[in-house]
Image (cartoon, helix red, strand yellow):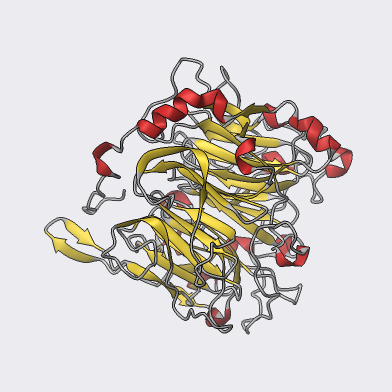
Length: 563
């Protein structure tokens, strides 16, 4: 795997070495000082069905529940922090923050309205590269939403310009009672919540069917509606949803048995159903066969040139056909993330340790974000050949995060692999490349996040680094400091803080910071706090602000070029 390209920093970048933090000298990365490249000639694995370690569990730890009820990727609950603007009407519509020192412009990670959560810890956060709204779920399963609400995407029963303070969200279950939540995901104008009852609930814009409520006549919903999932039922044999991911106008769900379901836009193949369904509406106007309910996607493919275990060249990648994997229908997934128009998913662990979990990507392939060495869309989940080989035998791909046009894969040993591009003035990284600027300096990464033009990595020793471009303070470097960085740069406000989860949105970044012991409390003392009383004038202004134009701008029809 190549490690060049400005998208994924190489060891030549001025990368920060691991600080003392909480891990000390024992936090050195378990791999060699120089990251090992993926073998270009890996022996192909057996083609029969795998035996998976199921069920897939929600990525959340709820208070009073046993540890076995949470997935291995569930972050430790803690305090919610945010950097970037609280004015959700600005991202994508304003060039930058005001020169005035405004309390709602958070230029460094700041504990966000702690009193709102009533003493509960935050156990899950969700935003996305194209979203200016966010969701947090407490360790009691209570969901809170804030940010842009022009299409009712917060499910509060009304649309508004923005909701400035985290506000309780609710959805009624089959018994009429409020649902306890275990997961969430957000798109540009919609939100999907996952309930502990095994159902998904969605609100917001539905122009492409991304709510999955089986009614594309509903253009938007300002209340959460139960998603329609093929094969679902209220009995014990129904599909049980445990995770969700969203692109700009598409949604994906994972079941406890690792099955994939998608709904919404098919324009770039992001439904993973093998086609876009493109058709002509009128001269110069194209339409697509979008999907209004969640259907299972069970066709997984690989490049014909990769089938024998060889990593294809760029020429082969551009011309090679894809073939269905022999065990396609039986493949189970354990993690999924959505970018602007693409998805990445990691296969569920096998009960046979010799089987390395495979990584699949599909949708828009701009800037090589799918990791196949070529800028081409993929209409079915395609195996990323770069994640095979002996280097991954004891360092399995574990989890993912996706930016607008980049993909991050975090391995079990704390290394991060990058493909795509998240900075305008950089080259694209066409295949997964280890971020050796981190690995070479002893960083063991435990949480990653990618936004519109930002990337964050948080380590087990209390170090957080970010790079990219963030005109609204979303990189977290502090007031008066730079707004961009070509290489990983310390987020000093979080020094020694154990960040257990990070999620990057438009104009803002969210963190869960552990607060379990005296050492955590000591580290948190230097993190600023904002409460409602500190921004009372701003909150009043936001509550009175009207939706401009009555909702989101109308989608431009594609006329042969890429958006």
